[in-house]
Image (cartoon, rainbow, N blue to C red; front, side, top):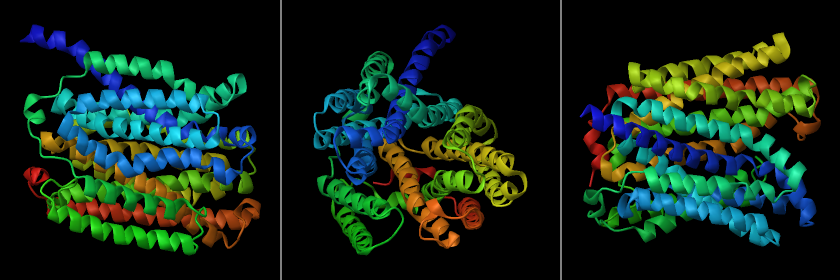
Length: 474
């Protein structure tokens, strides 16, 4: 028995390496393209609004399809679909790198986003069947580290590649990385279990289409106009609300729903998804508010602003693995609450200390917020994935990723609007230091309130806890 475990250990490590590379590539795909937008506008003689779709197409593909591909993995086999997703991501990256026109580049980015959605949705699901339960938190923490590294590495790596070889290099770099990931996954990921493959409950095309259109409408409502709501935003938001109603109706009438609505009767699952969205909304404030405060109020140049902002992802990368071990040792639910308390304290101090201590007063609370966020995210994901039945891991993993993405999208719009409103200026980029400082304090005050609300949800879910079996509701 000991000999067999010793033989399996290297395979588990290599399997985890392939899953980590999946997360790294998909998160790198989000952050690396932003730095290329000026070069793309020049190369294709296009407006900023047009080249912005290079980023939006990728994000929309992930957001709209991540739940559907997670459920599809439950049906056809997660390893099989993940290997296909890695292949699609790699091929689409090459198509992006050789695209002769902007429209073809945007189309290739949407394909790349589909591959990334598969990779994001299935990595956590496969961890649940590859890693022993006692080490699930550590494994999910490692995936969180790779996500943070990808986010932090994107702008700097993209800048180096563009300076040395042009904008096409930021996509072509994925070819060797994708091939390595593909080979590792093919060699070391465990075969799909026959028991799961024989459960052909069918796919839900109507629910998939309705959910995709609903999420697309919501994402566009939140991203168009950069936080300023006009008639188009309102129309898209109303379409999203109408889409939710149609989706719920469709799911109650099909024999094989994409999302089993009975799962949301599990208070722990519903609370985890709600907390994930709220916390991600708060984290987006650091990216929305930070650059303006650091440049307009503290007077930092662009390079120093980038350096300060990179502290967040780097701290998250360093903290995520220890956070997983802490969750394994002390219990994921308890650590989730500790992370939220730390985030609330960090947000409160972010609204107060920078005015007294300058850059140091901004960086120190930022470290508290991001390390606490890593603690929360790792523990929250672990708490959910441990209680999921084997035949629903893909769908639940997709829902977790979706809640995070929706929080980021919502935060970019809502926290940006709160900041602009509190600053009492129509052009924040040209505002005086005092209004920007006022806007920053108010925005982080709102952020602290949202985290406290998430903490209340966490505590309430313990009193109304339901057995894990409800994750499997048929």
